[in-house]
Image (tube, rainbow, N blue to C red; front, side, top):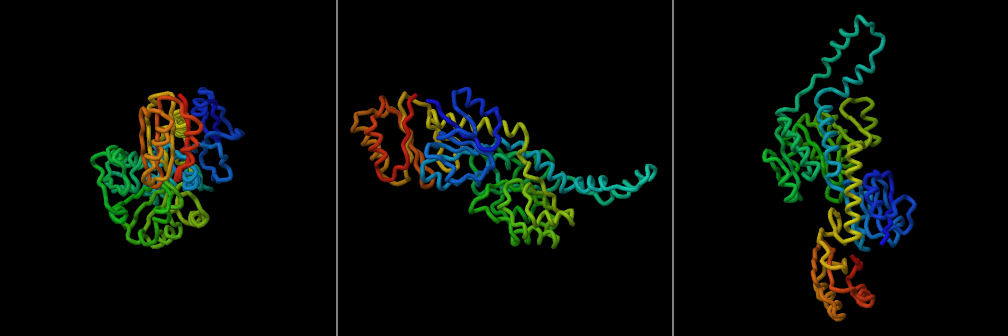
Amino acid sequence: MNYKVKTINNISDKGLDILKNKGYAVGEEESEPDAIILRSHKLQMSEIPSSVKAIVRAGAGVNNIPVEECSKIGIPVFNTPGANANAVKEMVLAALLMSSRGIFDGVKFVHGIEDVSKENLKAHIESGKKSFKGRELKDGCLGVVGMGAIGAKVAEMGVMLGMRVIGFDPQITVEAAWALPNEVERKETIEEIFKESDYVTLHVPANEHTTGMINKDLLSHSNKGLRLINFARDEIVNSEAIIYALENNKLNKYVTDFADLPLIERSKSNEDVVLLPHIGASTMQAEENCSVMAANQIINFLENGNIKNSVNYPQIIEPMETSYRLTIANKNVSGMIGKITAIIAEEGLNIIDMKNRSRDDIAYNVIDLDSEPSTKSIEAIKGEENIINVRQING
């Protein structure tokens, strides 16, 4: 089957070429696509044709995709966790240094030098540099909020820099826990992180649980002189609370990849806010990694029905045992497997292999059959109450 993939935003050719080499039609103008790849575009339901079977965000955050609505109509939404982790980690290192060593302020000082003679220049610089004395990262306490792919790399970096590293993540996975160095101390609450840390770096997604989590109350109980770094999402931090904490000496510096008008206004007259234009993952390597991961996930889903790195559907990765596979998404209610298998049995088909996984309100089934199911049986499955969608995949 010749699948179609619609691209939104600039997606690296390295991943798109993988799709094209498989015979896929790929581009911004593709109509009735089977899948969509995008980056930061705010996707609306009206932009998702009925032909779409999967949506992939070439990046980690998916707050620009209507995930809940996609779940209801059977569209798995994928992201590419870890593909840009190293790029963000390196920017966090830069932010740690900028918040500690007067680098940004020193650059502005030198760029602003005027009307100084060649003979007096060195003396002028030596006199001015006294204002930019900082502290070393070594022996400082680094708090990492969110211990996923990026948070784990940041924690490892902190250990290598000779810092005490503490972490908080109530939803840490076993895989992520294994990736952490033994030296990382796990804390039970975010309040502990803010009370003990000299530096806190944020690496959590924006959702109903994290929006506004960095607020006035949390900052009021933070370690005095804290440096806060945000390369996660702007929604998780309340800018007014940041400004209040800076004015009351609860925060020493705020470095973020997300500018808004109050913070921009603050940065014009104060040097305790450093704003960057959302460039944390803006490297050639990160964009290529995200594109390649996105392409491979699309191929594995469209051609095999396998799901990896979905944010709304359970993970299932199963090799096809036969040439005939059904994938079925249904509401996670009791009795569904019995109803599905009964319809298959009525047609006299033999199930060679079957896997069922659930996630929250969604269940997903992968069924390999010994022969091709009829249109009648597929329509019968679709007609059952609580079925979301059914796909037939012929190997």
